[in-house]
Length: 147
Image (cartoon, rainbow, N blue to C red; front, side, top):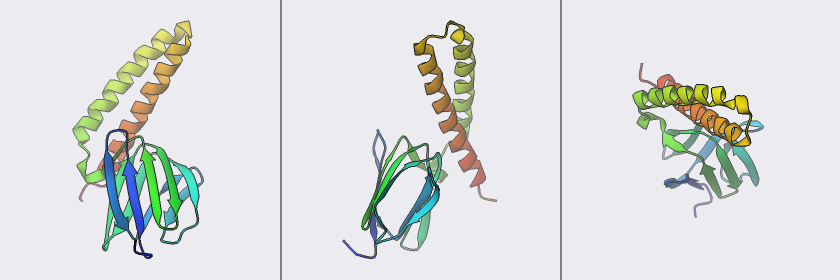
């Protein structure tokens, strides 16, 4: 391993999204934004929904992440993300449809919540997470559109 690089691995429940050597990696955690460089001190933090970026071979790549965790060591960074996809690969129409579906499901679930069951509270939480994920993806994709 080159001492001037960080081995970055980004894994979701479905697949390994990134497994490469990078010059730097950054994202937003619970204490705010950070950039990890080779030789960085050890730390572990959760990831907030938003952009995770890395720089390799003079190019910066950006991924939309919906949450998860990152562990940083001096020579590697390991990301366990709920979801991660390159921003330029986000299908805007699909993200808009996902928002509409989640909003519709949320309205129905809240109407049914008059019973106040725990199962319904869990369902509302899951739908809200889906809505947040879709809204984050859409916001990032639209913000990064070529001008």
